[in-house]
Length: 140
Image 1 (cartoon, rainbow, N blue to C red):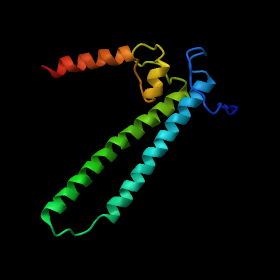
Image 2: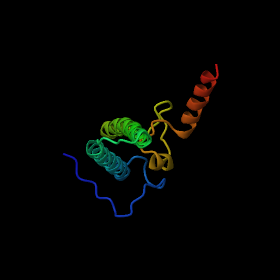
Image 3: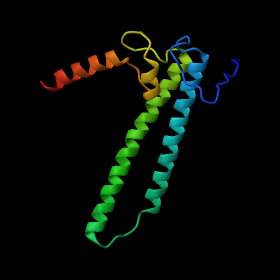
């Protein structure tokens, strides 16, 4: 059984410590879990709102406006559902000891990038190469 890692209250990973040490790993694990919980809470509130919001609106313009709002909300929730899947994948990578390393190069992903986008699987350079290739193929 692993010992629980204690993080100081204002802990932030730095380049001065070994990459993906126990503290950094725990920091990102907690960040991902908090993000996932926040998304799931928002999703529950949306479902409650959609169930409560089902009503008969006689005015056609008002009904169309409400349906547009609901469609937008559902699209947002679908994006968040996909994000939860990516968060789960990142948590799996943490458990497997693969978190924080670029899938293309195997090099460490910068802590700054991981802090901004904890689900990142590519280093900034690899992501830029990927996007350039994607753009070239899209223009065909």
